[in-house]
Image (cartoon, rainbow, N blue to C red; front, side, top):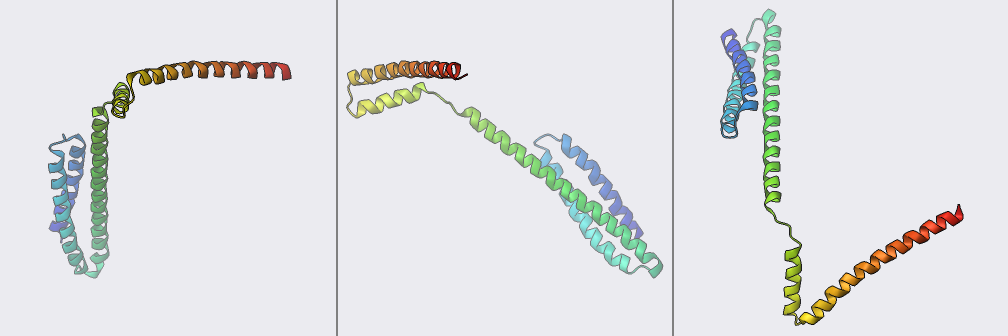
Length: 165
């Protein structure tokens, strides 16, 4: 049991060092490192199953200690498995955010194009250029009426506050 335990313990420490490499790996090699770590973790789980069987066959005075050592290894490996999954989830989220960012940056937002499309649609509907100019002139005049109304409202509110206080 002891040589298998030592080998498995050594593999756990190697995986811990690989986890550090995982953080610094470039985008192309990160998948290779992840697969290598996962394969090692799977191999350790098979060793742990064998160690559990062997620990139950230990003499009664050593059995409790052997089971504790195997349980500690199992806990360490489960912790490494969780750390790997968390890293993969963070990487996936980061890649998804980068794709969404690129997609948003590739879009073009123009208002002039929209106005041109509206004019094209209006022309298709048979509205003449004269009617279109009247509509644009009315929109321009409406803007001044709106600004004048806002200023008048502000003056009335100011006078009301002055009069009431």
